[in-house]
Amino acid sequence: MNLVERLKKDKKGFTLIEMIVVIVILGILLAILVPGMIKYIDKAKDKQIMVNAHAAYMDATTAAAEAYGLPGGDIEAAQDAANDVKTATGTVSGVTYEKDKGITAMTYTDDASKKTVKIEGGEWKEVE
Image 1 (cartoon, rainbow, N blue to C red):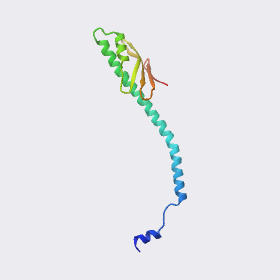
Image 2: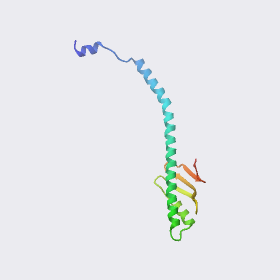
Image 3: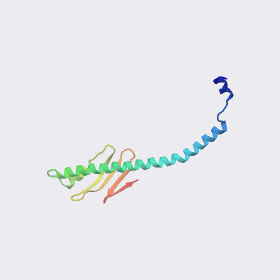
Image 4: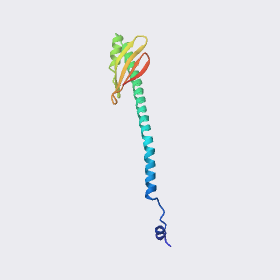
């Protein structure tokens, strides 16, 4: 008996009912998994916005310190320089600069998501 004849005789495989059961089980698993993954992705995006806000804070601090250190530099020049900071991902505004403390308040707005992060008194808060 050659291979083709054996394959014709040997009709092993899955029935339609078995295939439907497997597809239903996969659908249930996906229904459980997808919402959890979406929440995980949203949390990761929010953390990325906080990282971008911290980087913008560092940029604003550097700009303010450089402006304050220039001849004739004062607090207003430092605040103006910090408020002019534009990063690749967002903008900085509402900067309050104090002589011995540096930046005490700042608002960062993410360009892509339009979410806003504020720092006030050393505390980072996401504003809706």
